[in-house]
Length: 640
Image 1: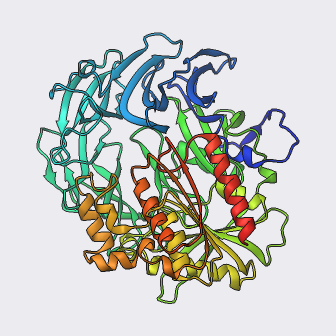
Image 2: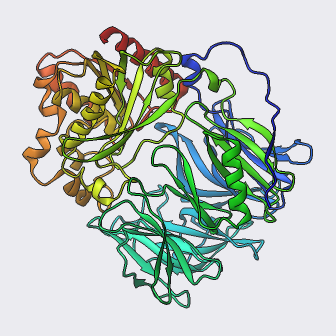
Image 3: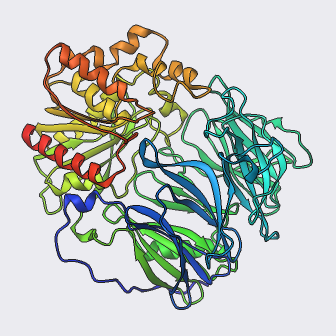
């Protein structure tokens, strides 16, 4: 029986000063905390002097045992405990033409006391990780082998010494058993398809792999685990997503979408092919599996509106504990980042719309949580603005979810408003902390976010409803959310601006063109503005299935693409414009911003301009983020 959960919190002293724009532009001080399998040490990803480093701490007295030295050209990214003493780190490279660190699939090993440090795999040095293909490549951890203290399973995609895939048309990904001290690899299995994800069973055997073809089709393959052969699985790879195996490896837990509806959680018996529905929502698909280890699932996270959880078996202790934690931290997102092999200790991450995150060490015997760290100690949740969920229906019958953030201490009426469409478009907004949203709300603006058609997480029908509607019905959905804010009395109809990044940057300018009397100003941040240009410039065209993706989502008619492109329709604008871009953006290349600039110059339409060297798809350097926030606020204030 689960005891009542008690919170033993020892918060550090915080400044009494109000949060500033500069505060909100900062990176977190602490990114993640994970506990070793034996519970004796914590590994903490820390921001030191604007670079990440990894520090190790004893749990018995919270003393630091070792911290990686800062490097000018590399830093730790994702990391994993692989036995009681050793952590594997995905290295991020710093420098070159980008402020944003990049992950090239290099793996570094280190013990908690700093011993036995080694670069185990690198795209630059094939000799470090000799695969059967005789080269290095992009490597990711797949599975910790509990009965093997010296090896793990990794997936490796072949790459050349410049970190480029050897051939976009002949990508080879394989599962390898890698020695965690030497980097030596032994081939286990080769994937039949590129751009893939593997799922291994509880014996560490690769059993499922899903990937994409050159025509942007998602394919799913299955193996009985007894040889090299893969067979095409009966279920569609796009609508059937295996998550984890049952303990006996006889069944697989999977997300399955029927007739394009939001996916349900199923248990699929591999022998009988019997499918048992465990959970289904008519609004949204489950967001992510809840795992007690890298492969063992006990539930799923749900995000219809606010974070929620479904537990597959209420009698499992880890599920009972997670339920108790959710109750103790009511109104927050509660995630278990890691736990010991015996399940007695776990690290818990708690966050919300107003809290960027806090970490606790939870003892499952005493049912007490001890406060460890807060991600951004200078952010005081009580001073942040609350975010509430809403649901609306469009004129053509689409159901949309969204979020409305109101400035703290406002009456929520007749407010100047920023509409903020998300990027993607195949992504979605969640109820969570957003520095950009909080920056705007701190200055008295309401912020409207909506999951328009084309967003992911609401079923394939909803996502496909956005195909070839980038400039049309997607923008109509954004307008519908804007009208909701006006009609409910939240927003002043004469004081509305629209701002977004990536696809949201496109939508900001396109919505200002489609609804010129609604939006008084628009901020396009890392946006695309000339859709035909996507076929010629940027990294989408370099992906094996890139052209097929563009054909599917934009349509084959060049005139239709131009009709949805702001660059070809600037004569319809009335709103003030602020164009923001990074010179090294590969997804939405700088040529997109210059194409819009030229079109505006040709008709002598005024705009503001901010371009930063060495920045990619969204700014990373704190001083650039701060300048972007400051200039955006000044631009908005001037126009609404």
